Image 1 (cartoon, rainbow over the protein chains, first blue to last red):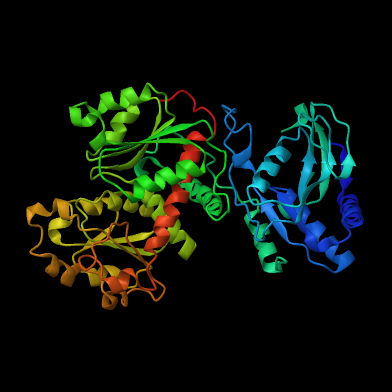
Image 2: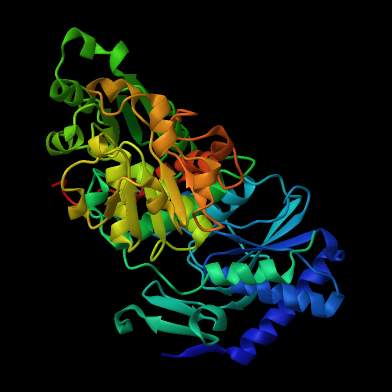
Length: 181
Length: 334
């Protein structure tokens, strides 16, 4: 399985994105990070640490579970039902700039669900999208504001993001569908 | 307002890799706790955690059951359960219809099966049913394609009540396993008792029941629990005390001499509460008879979680509705 990014590369990428966030937003005090479960959450926490290292400011972090907003919730007949986990946004998103964080941007449907879910919490000043990997094949008019790495893929390939917090190691892998299992 | 580090780390914990064994309920129905495995019970309780958060949002609604129809079919009076189901259905964006037997064709003599089949012709996805006869929901589940949720059938089961009680206990005690739970009152007529005892024993709690000998059903020991007529013995060192309602409408049989005497011998008083653990919680499925099974000082006291039970009821019912109707079509209804 070819490795796209190793731990060091991921760390450098997240630092670069943190710099881009500051460059674009100047004042970080009205920013907040919201990670999409599962792997967007640790990525958001790491970006927060990077932002603190650069600016000395603490940006609030939340976690969003988008399961109940998915457009394919009613369509899978055999696939196991997705387990719902808690959404935790312990701050008001009103008039803040929200950085929505996910690991992989693919069809855009997860992000669409994430936007709907976020807007049920209030009216943010703006929402910007951060992804570690953009693999193309969009089915909705959505693009990311900050991209760790653009990876041209075929629909038969899949991107695996592994993070220390959830999987015990930092790696981004690309694999052919038939290599799985 | 920055998120402190402790809260940030709790986000990590929830996010951890520990997944429960079950990821869905097996059947199309929720008929009773008897039909659930411990893994399925834990799945409902875990899903409830996520649902509870929705109730704290400014917009308390998610689109998960959009386009699904749920009929609430109540053949017995109910405030808490019916309202709680209705709120849960609305929060999940399902279309909810309420039918109370008193205002329906049931008063014209229509049978249960005919009522249900006629409603089913309008293709609901779920029917939430309360009925005075034990087994009514099992019967309906066999003749209906729609999923049936038992909201209380006669003296048999009331599974969503037991699930919300378990959720409330787990919130306070972090576990069910190994707790001493005492349940006191009318053990004979109570479907809440049956569902709760089944759930607690499945999850490994030590269960004590107590009440007047006339209201202890024969053979209750077969459920793997301890029965005693001494309330003091039952609540000694208990982590949880649950009081059951004396069902005044079912007390024509002379089960005990007077309500006053019942309160003296079996009522939950502050003195009796002191025999339990210092961090005991007091529960009651409602509606309460103050001064009969529970003293007002206890019902309104610091150990009481009675109103939390009601609040958690909505989240538990959302979890059940979602798990039964939210994940696409079930493989050919059995």
